Length: 92
Image (cartoon, rainbow, N blue to C red; front, side, top):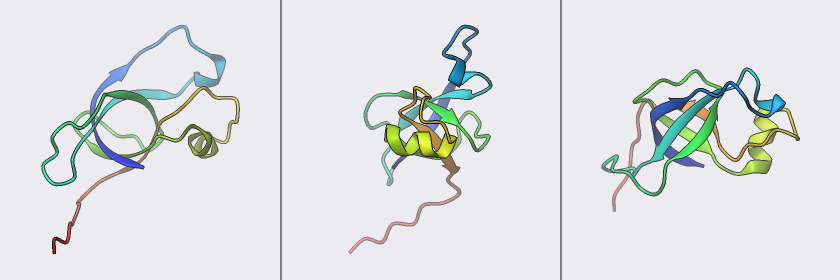
């Protein structure tokens, strides 16, 4: 699971039938301490009604992502599973 920022959305009129009715968002992985971009953006299915600029938890393992959607045939690798309110890091 990673923390990311929602930076956009995707509209697709022609897509795999299993994606019908699913909200697709573009997420940018970020660092925990400074929220700077870390890695490449990806498309994730949103199951928690996240919005642009929200900080979110993203499950990016295809098998377990399909479990969240209760559909073993859906072509997905990333699912937004939570909206982050706060991150507390303990530094030693």
